[in-house]
Image (cartoon, rainbow, N blue to C red):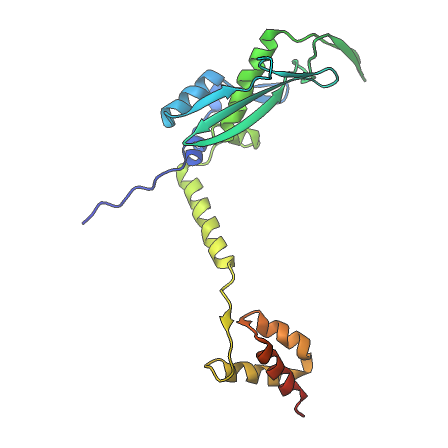
Length: 227
């Protein structure tokens, strides 16, 4: 008896099933995951994984807008698939940092946002990488506000259920309808029994299952005109 073939997990199935709780921490309502640990786990599961820091035309590892602040961007490639992610440079209160410090007013008084440094940009780049990895499944459940990841079996079952539903929802292909074929008498009997619904509606109903030629539509109309 042949050994049952093991199901091959997708990248998302493998990475989304990893529990990251012991390597994450909460700060100001946000959950942060250690980039070093996240990258190590990704490389263990997907040795071909690579990442890239997106730079501007001048070679800077960020883009800057005087009104909006700094933005960092990364790309991760696994198994030939490349996904991008971006993240603004923010302070501890999640306020956008700029080249110069500024203040803003809250109901508790005036608050200050310090000018960004390369340290802030470096932290943002690595946080952006972690968020990028989540697009492949690593720690994605913490972004969804869940406490634990789904097991591989749960992910597989959900995907198989989704596929089954998709197959069920697919419409059966329409059949051709010709005068005198096997389905003709049944269709004509249906038309006669429901003639009170009118020709337009009956043609639409029959047309959901059959491909109606001009001659068939004319035949339906003729039957409805017979008193």
